[in-house]
Structures are given as C-alpha cells and as structure tokens.
Length: 211
Image (cartoon, rainbow, N blue to C red; front, side, top):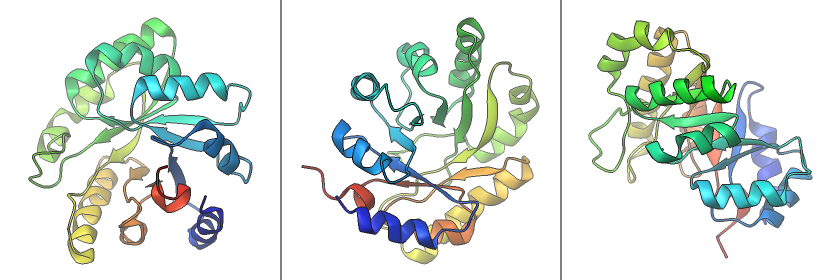
C-alpha cells in the first residue's frame, strides 16, 4: 500500500480537485485501509467485481461508488441501482436508457459523458461536434444530473500531447457549462490538473501494484 504516496499527492491538490481511487482489481481490505485515512470515492469498471465489494463493505456508508468502465446495455439497470456516479457514458443511446431506467428506479445518478478527443480505436466516447449538436436534446433527459465530461488519453503520449487533449476536454466542458472533468490517471495526473481536471482517476499510484 502506497499510503504515503496517496497523502503526498492529496496534499498537492488544488481544493477543487478530487481523487477517485480506482479500486478495480484491488481487494475490499485494501479499499478499507485507504478509506480509513479519508478517501471516500472509489471507481470500479466491472459490475460483478464491484457488487461483491459493495456487499462486503456495505457498513462503510461514507463510500461513494463511481462506475468508470465500458457500459454494457444489459447492465445499465444494475449500474443505476448501485452507483451514484457514472463516468463513462459514451453514447446518446446509453444515456437515454440510463435516463429511462433511472426514472423507473426512482434514482438520479450523477453523469459524466465520455468524449473521444483523438483517433484511438481502443476508446469509445461522444464525438465533440455531435455532443454539441445534440446538447439541447441531452439536457431534456429526466432523472439524471449531468455534471461533467470524462476522457481517457491514448497511451504513449508526451506530456505536451496529453496536456493538449486535456485542455480540449476542459474547453468543451466549459462551453457546455459543465463544472467537472474526469481526466488524468496515474501517468498523467499533473498535466490533467494543469489543464483543469476536477477528478483524477488514480489506481496503482495509490494502491501500489496489483497482487
């Protein structure tokens, strides 16, 4: 456990930037250890793995669970039932389904829309121009709260290239009057902060290597 690493990073963050501890692949006990020193936001990307941890840790009511993985349509109801935050909504169709299911379940998840800012075949997300075009329609959807945008940069970029894409995301969020940007991971979090990130998704940097 890199608890000292976590505390060091936390001490450097501007007041508007929060850490999302990416706990996928780590055990419930490791989540508990880091929660004990004040970390309450945890990100998971596989529903079944997350749900098992949620059951084990159900007494820790301060924990806020964030879904950050690729969303499968057949898992949307379970995600809405069990996650307060959803960072990875990558299409209008999925957003509409989340809105519909949230209405049925009497929920109101906090949503970040995933945007695709580079030609990376491994990443999904809204095309920025299409997002702007559909923005009026998106704002009409019920039982969801749109709080920001999420992006994942391709691997292997230079700090300058990372920074450029992060600034694009921040600029798009500002143009849509969205406060949050979920961007920056263990390898590029400093560039993300400089570009205006409000949520850093940090895994190995704070949990250490997966056992």
